[in-house]
Each structure stands twice: as structure tokens, then as C-alpha cells.
Amino acid sequence: MVFAFPVYQQSFLLSERNDGKMGSGGYTLVELIVVLMLIALLATITWPSLQASLDRFILEEAAWRMAREIRLVQQLAVVRGEWFQIEFLHNYERLVIKRQGETWSTLQLPQQIDMEPTTFTYNEVFFYPSGAPSMGGTVPLANGRGEKRYVKVTVGAGRVRVARER
Image (cartoon, rainbow, N blue to C red; front, side, top):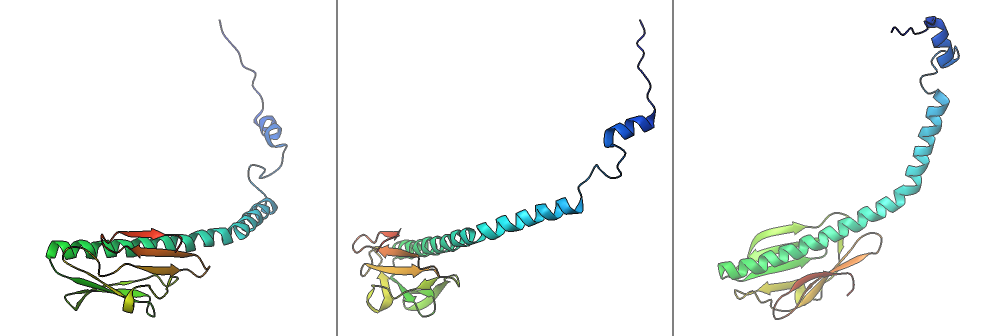
């Protein structure tokens, strides 16, 4: 059995497919401009919320990084059997870590983060070879939107944590 398929002229297939219009397989310039305007409008609407999220993320990261550095200093004091000191320089947005009185390391906060005066006496804390801090205190960090995070060191055991409230 032989099947036969009808043969159509090529011009008939082309004219049926695109109604004889040139370039109807793509988009017009007007359509592209409308789509770009919609994308720009959506970006304009969502940008403030994205910026707020980014500012909050930078604040959280700065607070957790400071807490990690304080814990590291506490562990180093125990492992090395020496006392360490952390100075919180809120005017310069950094903390200075000293080992036996000599500068050992510094941590510079991101430019968007402000360190407010701490509750530590003289804005410093010592970690003794036992790992215990000389005192407990809080380091307030803030971003430009007024959001704050508090890095807290408890007296005695020297637990270090990040809190949203004082």
C-alpha cells in the first residue's frame, strides 16, 4: 500500500504561516520598549525593599563577625595561657585585639555600620587565661536605617551572643 501526501506550493505554506508579513517571527520595537518599561517600573518599586534587606544583612554580618572575633580571643586566651585585651574604638568603627599589651589584630567594621559607646568600662574587656572576661558588657551596632544589633558578653562564663534588643 502506498500513501500519497498532497504537495503544496512553497509560497502557499509561507503565506499561510505568516499571512505574507515580513518579519512577523520576532518582536516589534514597540513591544520591546513596553517590556523594558515594565521591567524598569518593577525595579523602581522593589529597589527600596532590596536596599533595606541589604542594610540589615550587613548589620547582622558585622555583629556576628564581631561575636566570632570575641569568641576567638577568648579561646586563644585559654589555649595560649595568656591574657588578651579587646579595645572597642567606637570613634573609628573598629576593635583592636591586644596580646599581653601588644597589638595583635584589628577588625574594621563595614562603612555602613556605626559602633556606639559600649557598656564596658573604658570600652575594653580583658580575657584571662581561664577564658573568663574581666567584666560583662554590650557593644551596640547600628546601620543608617536606625536598626541595631547588640553583641553581648556575659560576666563569669563569658558567653558571647548577638541580640536584637538591649
